[in-house]
Image 1 (cartoon, one colour):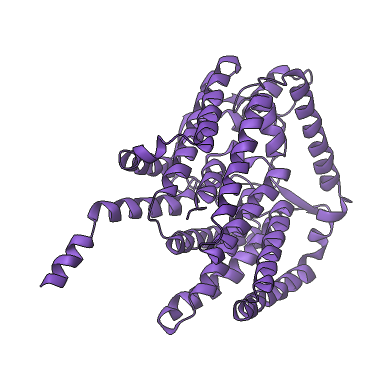
Image 2 (tube, rainbow, N blue to C red):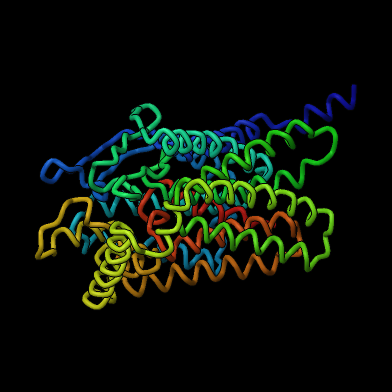
Length: 438
């Protein structure tokens, strides 16, 4: 009787509900179901980077944050160097509304930033289970991967407003395709806005899946072991069909880090299991490259028309960013206003989809928030990693996998912008940084 009373005393229904609400947020984070508040069309084409909408995962996250805030307000109010920098960074982003050309857009992105940082802060004091987070992320990304494989192998796509899916006809300008013998091949989008985003989330999901596989090895967990062993090869194949070079590079660097860690710590059993998975990935890669070498080779040789065009455009984006930085070094052009600034200041009229952010998140932050915002952002990242290294003695294996996922993030940030320009990217970024806990 006493043991039953003790068990009931230890059960906290509120805490369980909050945890389940967070896990629900993780699942829906990978889906783009959105209620659009504002759309801007130019010459009949949607200006994607001026769109404002509320995603279903934001509603779930907002609810979770509100229910959690009163519980940890004392911890958040603590005066630390990191808290001060985060406060100043958020304050600066809101101040940038004053000199933004599209103030509603700046307000929207500043609000997104606040939600992302609150997500980061609240995870620090939660009792969330990293394995459960990894499982939910892996399963949700698996569904995305299956959708991406369908799109690539059937070379077709469809729209669905309830799932946030858009059709991607290969003939349409702005759709990410590959060229082969005058044919246009659709890259795998999944339910994301771009194949590079799908590639990034699949690369991260595979790293989390490897962590799970190495931790579900006893007889009681055989179901999870075989399920993960089924999902990982499919997600890896889907990663290949995105043809995202930044995601591929980030994944390779993340895997190398894990190998180095296991070798240095002499964890032979885990190293053997990791090598088994790596052998599966290599086999899939060689089968894929044998069948689609004519699509993969141009991604690295820049010989086709589209690849040359892509390289030229990326260089022009960097040049545009450098011009903005030189003209607005201190203040920037306002958070979320990079593409809008280009559209308003361009002397040459372009297709609306050509007004794109620079494909480098660090250049983009500097362009939008100036040297002040860039300095605050980089120092926040530095302090988070410094704290992680100080606490690295605890949960080493878990943290090396989290570090591997953030290596993927920062690799992507060097070659793309979606971790700053999309709601999914903003929350994914702060979520993974928030997982660096004691």
